[in-house]
Amino acid sequence: MKFAASLAEQAFGSIVTFTINLWLIRNGASASYGVYVFWLAVAWVLGTAQGTLVITHLFKLPAGPDHAEARREPERLFLTVMLAILATAAIAVAIGDAALRGAGSELSSPAAVLFIPAFMLFQYARAFAFSRQRPVLAAGLTGGILASASLVLVLDKWLGHQPDAERVLLLTSLAYGLCSLAVLLVLLDGAGPMLRAADIRRHAHLLKGSWWLLLGAASGEITSRLSGFAVVARFGPEALAVLSAVQVVIRPAWMLSAAWTSIGFPQLSARHAKGDTPGFVRTMLGGASIPGAGCLMWTAIVVMCWPFISDTLYHGRYLEIGPLAYYWGAYAVLGAVAVTLNTAMLSIGEFRRLALLDLAGAVMTILAVAVVVSRFDYPASVIATLVGQIRQIVLMAMVLLPRLWPSMAVRPEAPPLDSAGDKSPDPIRF
Image: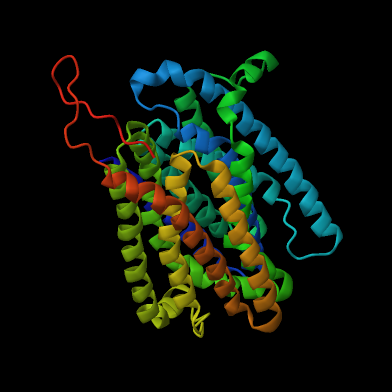
């Protein structure tokens, strides 16, 4: 039931992204769509930073109604940090947009100042629901955003407004912000942010490792998104629009990995705490193999059906995409493996080592992007992302495998009996 609800939530999220992208692709100019993709990428980058500073710690709290009291103060601290991050993000985006507007860049969009904090609030409310093991509520949140965003976009066009990045960012920010605020209030149940400095200092240890997490997340974002920013800088918004038009059709395959992460992270943390190494490994293998196979099959469908997709969804645009579908498909398949290994390392608290491994992948990506973008056309930029992704996978596997398989082979032949006469072997720690 929990996985089904999590999968439904991911499906709603994929449909939200797909619907908004398709709305602009079909009804707006390519350059305007490129502007929307740019600010959405910025939102994901800042949302990832928020995730490392708050959401990762939120997932490590004990879940269930029996732990409501133990969670109360940590949740108040995380709410305070989240609000500070939203305020900082809004100010940073306002300054960045003003700089773009002053430089005469077509990427400027004042509505991004509202959209990005609203999107980040959604990410927090969604994670909050999952951390409480309430995937149905999380699915309701994302489904509510899908319904409300679709309604306001259709109503706006019915009123005679031509869709562009500015209007779409503004209208969807209302859907993200209002739905997320409603769910957050339900989850908080009257609790408020932690405002006293003494209380914050007393609970600050709960944020231990955040800076290493932030370094890792920043490095991961460089690996996954640098090519997009490089393309828009080198080739312009229209080139980014072509990349995104293909990626958005491949992206539904990602919902399997994301759905697994939402339930797999707490499971891995629990198995690690119990010393259940075989169960830990089984959960990892399932998290890599099932979503990876799903991504592979979905990519094959997209490749075979691309002429139909181009004609039906994009009004005949983007018919000639070359190898882009193969590139993005490989990215999705490798991503399923990378997400599983990354989640495993987070669940065992390897924040520092994971940050350094992500940094190594980011360095490789920067070098690859610099070479590829300067020498080849923009579709090859995805290859540079794949290079950094492969390096991350190899390095994470080199850290995890020696810790897991040797410990699985160590099995006590005759576990000692406790005072009650039950077998009670020491848990396997790794």
